[in-house]
Length: 217
Ligand code: BG6
Ligand code: MG
Image (cartoon, rainbow, N blue to C red; front, side, top):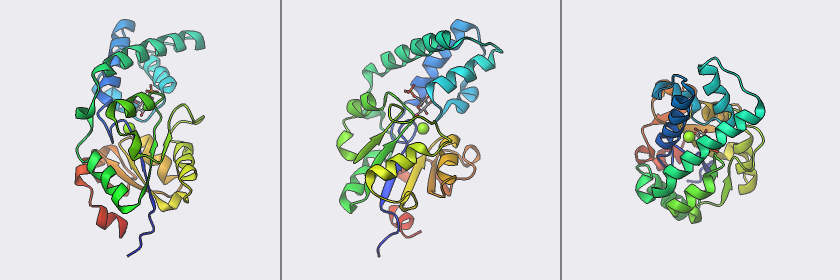
């Protein structure tokens, strides 16, 4: 049976690979340096959110403000640490089921795109050696509006030559779920249902994806 879904749009951090822990470590290091309270629970709000917005949130946790130049300096410091943590990054950091789903997409002719807020997506994809599994990569270098704005997903659908509603989004962040649902796109949440209200279904990871039943939805 022909499915109405022609393309899968994947968020990267927390869906394809386990980068969230390195983002956390780098923000935590900056928070400690600035004496701002920050823990894993607070870090949930950083998922799917652009680097500069995370910077604003972090300063907010400490009731601090900084001018634009200082914010950029601090965010660059965080990013340098993050990229340093990625030095050892390799295929072992792929999340369960990610490679199987990507291979299945190739077998079934389902188009694929990365739709991520991260400006580091190219480094990560190359370290994971999975660039060839994607027909398009839309990342933080190509977007002007951060999730929950749907721009990244609309650009992904456009680059793949399909209508947004012919896509399925895979997202671990609430901001990403909201972005997808604002355009009425089917969203598979990755993680815990309580963190992803609004998603059409929520699964622990891509290893729990039933592609046949999804395509027949
Ligand atoms: C998202 C992450 O994918 O990318 C966020 O979930 C992160 O936590 C954002 O802040 C931006 O990433 P980067 O690599 O450009 O700092
Ligand atoms: Mg994510």
